[in-house]
Length: 391
Image (cartoon, rainbow, N blue to C red; front, top):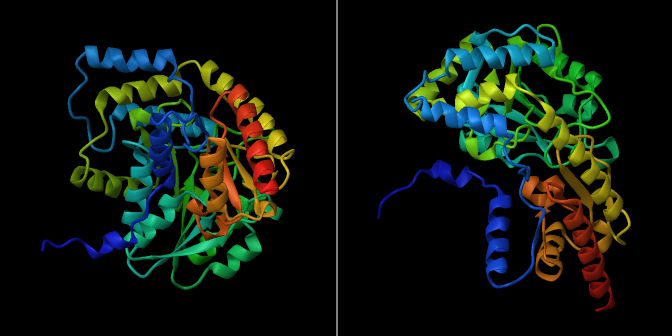
């Protein structure tokens, strides 16, 4: 019998795509499903961005580009980060990759050895823990607690650092909770990294999707870029999930290593897509502003609605487009609630345990859907839970 790598046993998955597949099967059988499971904006890519990509194809920009990204694209990324994070960044700090996930994977690959420890948020984006485990390192879980607004408890964080710790992963605004780290949180995390000679991987993919406050980046702290990996991309802000465009802002030496990994893995990011990236970051931002305003309206609708359903409570998220609802008072586990929501209410959502063991008792709803559908989903859940209570 042919052999497979033992390391595959440590590689996780993303439940969102499995739930989506199940929901599609139910729809094929004629069942009405409201999709609140997938983390994808429901808006089209802004027209000016799409046109830039189409024009690039028509102009023949369909060949290889440099593995770390086109020089012009890296310059645009550097200027964008310099402006939005208030820090001086050069093209030598920037690497363009086909999505933010490759940035996360390659960055951890380039900085972490087997046996090292990496502190990851839980509940958190499952890729962090998955990649760390796959590479033979140990994920150390930082419990994000509802009573702390799903932010890092810096006192708890300090206790997790050991002589084997090599990296702290942060994600703000956060998936799945919508929690946002404060400037004080980031200063404490940075000082901890300095004192213990740690990397900080800062996933800032939702940096523009934030409500009621200003986005804070750890990269803005003087000196932080020497040990910080900033991860950002086009999928969420510009509704470009299928374009596969992400980028890293890192120390120049790490940028060279990331480029070397790219050469050995995917060669380069699609050239014409990088023209779309440049248009997105330098062109009009009206569509982004409209999308964020719409997400804020939807956030208020779904959170207010969930808090009116018996057995459910939900903090108001400060960023991203997810409501992380507490369902413990329904008497169901996260998985049981998600199954009930799908099978009985026709509402696709994700069990909190899809984001780590500390997600038990919670369910994630993506409000990247219309206000009408969000209100319908609340009504369906209310009816299904009332029916379950009578039984």
